[in-house]
Length: 222
Image (tube, rainbow, N blue to C red; front, side, top):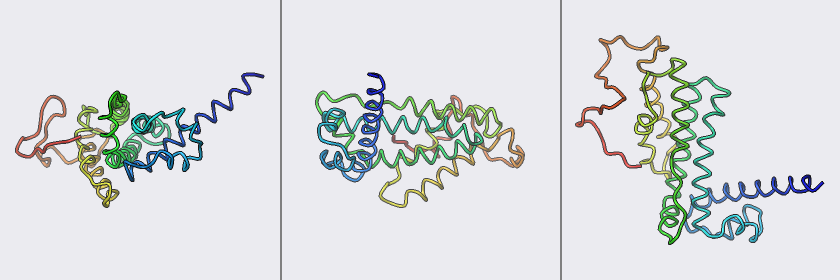
């Protein structure tokens, strides 16, 4: 009987925590100085519940970032379970774009959290890198993309996401950028019957260990 009473409490606590994180993402994206009391109120939790989960602003901000990173990473396997590999990759790219826009909107809040004394460490990108690798290997095994593309290649190719202003028409701009990247991934794919013959293709370079012509490269800022 004791376990039956405890289980719903754990479930409720988890839902409260996730609700706080979802509301905090939206509020902190709009304003890095969003009051914690307002976030708690919109999440429908009391001050005691809020501060038991997040004792200060820095802890909340970095947990929002960690939570969103993991949500994006988890979406990769979920999409592969219901879609073809290339469609799963393209839809995951859209999810990654949403994350990039949220991260850009929260940039000031993240900087404040990082600069706070004794603040927690910023979460790493390992889950997103692993998710990209999972999708790329599934697409390669399916013959849907060119062979040999690594997660590092992919993340460098979409680095332009981090340059797009989330306050502008980011949906249209990110869709166009990601379509271009996807077209590039499909070029040279074994399963692409419409791929041009070698004589019709422009200059190509290996994705492993080499770089494109320096005269056409651009600086990339994460």
